[in-house]
Image (tube, rainbow, N blue to C red; front, side):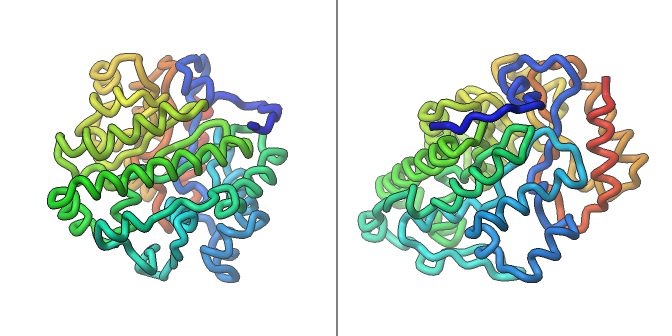
Length: 337
């Protein structure tokens, strides 16, 4: 059962229901990441696995941005690949190489042997982290998970091999996506039951798919996930500006946009059926605070009075992003009227 808490700031939930009346809410993807010196200090003492698997550490890292910036949402500190632990897989995080599965799925026989174990047991540390966070937050906590196609690419271990498998043996590839879809739903439900008020689904590799494959291997499964959940949902898909209209039809509460698209023009394209999130170029934050304010104000002006708008970057914040530029970004959003 979802944990009840009193939220002083519900702006992001209002925006996800197209009912926000004031300045738009703001948060940043990867906001508790490597750009924060506090994060790097903790990371020097603990591995990523240890940080994400230890509820006290994961909760501490989740809260770090709020000690510097007044974001309007928190997002659980974790990684999309940890769901593979519920399949009995080991995940390793190597410096400079990123995360990987130690025993990738290679063929149809491997798919047939996959079995979802007890998700509540395998990912109990996520639930415990959320339960620690809820009393500390006056803003909604977002849960998250990867989308089936993106997860499949990591589970197979190579994006090119994943696409080759998709074309050569679509039946077993779809069987793999079916398993992962069920796993994602169970994982997000665990987060929701623990207290997450909304969730974001990351289909980070969707941009490599052609239009027919997008419908079959991305949108179809995204819709199944969205339909199974009872809280607002956001979808992030890299390259989303190229396929915004069909993505908006998936049924999620909101979609996150990258920066090659004008948000006012996009609003005209998709109508008012969905909340829009984004879409400042993350590289702008490497400019001076004055430039950041100017570019952020221009973005805000374009979406002025839109009740279904959430301010964010078009992708995750990059390491070494200047803190003063992040502060300028957040302050400009909160001061906008």
